[in-house]
Image 1 (cartoon, rainbow, N blue to C red):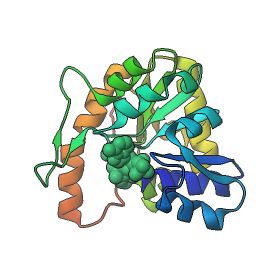
Image 2 (cartoon, rainbow, N blue to C red; image 1 turned 180 degrees about the vertical axis):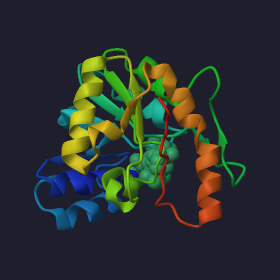
Image 3 (tube, rainbow, N blue to C red; image 1 turned 180 degrees about the horizontal axis):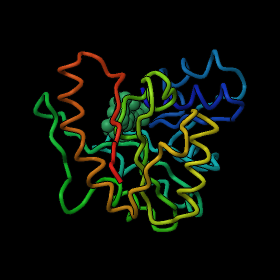
Length: 209
Ligand SMILES: NC(=O)c1ccc[n+]([C@@H]2O[C@H](COP(=O)([O-])OP(=O)(O)OC[C@H]3O[C@@H](n4cnc5c(N)ncnc54)[C@H](OP(=O)(O)O)[C@@H]3O)[C@@H](O)[C@H]2O)c1
């Protein structure tokens, strides 16, 4: 869902996108690429990591760190936008968090990729809203964090160019440890989704200063 939403928008904006999967002949990935033309291609996770200038990790949280560790050499020196959430659905709904409080999936990803600039972003909203913030009226906010200021500035610029996120609505929460809070919002997000019956909502931060 997330990889295809992001990939489609990026291709439509003129970028080349390689969709990674466990298999280069993943049927869902091939069906995604077919109508998008030559700028959309499919590969293994390693192939996608090698092809991209900037990578998105949109893998299931339960497998994210293992997948990233396996493609570590291909991501050195690059920016990785980490979108995944550490959700464990093995005991049904609602899912629980596999990691929280003193660690996070974003930090685990950064540890697995010591030579990559991991920027945690976009994980606190539904994928339709990620790529089209105008689905939610008015100003609302996107959180990001990471250890490298230049990588975060670059991601902020790209999120504006690619998806239309106003830089003023992007809140930089600091280093990668802020992933903890960004991921721990998920139980609240899931309950709001259940109550509203609709995923097209987001958080707006108001302050009096
Ligand atoms: N859905 C949303 O709107 C949303 C919003 C915010 C954040 N997120 C987070 O974004 C991530 C992606 O979510 P999603 O809903 O698009 O899909 P998902 O079903 O959570 O994840 C699909 C991805 O995980 C990979 N995967 C699944 N099982 C695997 C395994 N055993 N080993 C290695 N890779 C495996 C899949 O690879 P294959 O292609 O090979 O199957 C595919 O790349 C999740 O971490 C989710 O929590 C989702």
